[in-house]
Amino acid sequence: MKLLNVRKRYLGYLLVVMIFFGTISSVVAYSVISERSPVLECQEWGFYRSKGKRYYTYPEKIVVQPWRGQHHVYAIFNVPSEYINDKQFTLNISDNDTFCGILKYEGTGSIDNVSPKPGHYLMKGFINTRQALGIIIQGKGDELKQASNWRMGYVKKDEKL
Image (cartoon, rainbow, N blue to C red; front, side, top):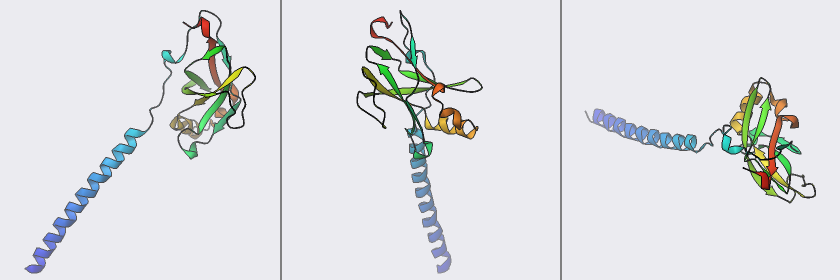
């Protein structure tokens, strides 16, 4: 009889511990999933309209290292100082797949062994790591490394709408 009571108590403790750790695991998993950066889609707000001509530039350097985690798939662009660049850039992959990424101002100093041309500043354009991995899995990883597939637009500051 005592042995039966000990087993019931042991199973009760075991059930409480399992519920506790299950709850903790669920909370941690939700936190990790909800913290993942969203996939950025091409938006109208990401591209300036201009009264004048629109210009485009291609990257000086491309880094594709998604296995290192977030922010390791990017391109570095040179932009003339008298112009303002779009807030997003495009990455065109074969089969008419166009991805948009966000840009970060890097200034007039060197970054990743890239120096701005005289009278220019540098912008770093990031593609979402999950999107880059998807492109690589489809067998199109080489297209990520082609400068002609990455394009950033810019307009004269005084002609921006």
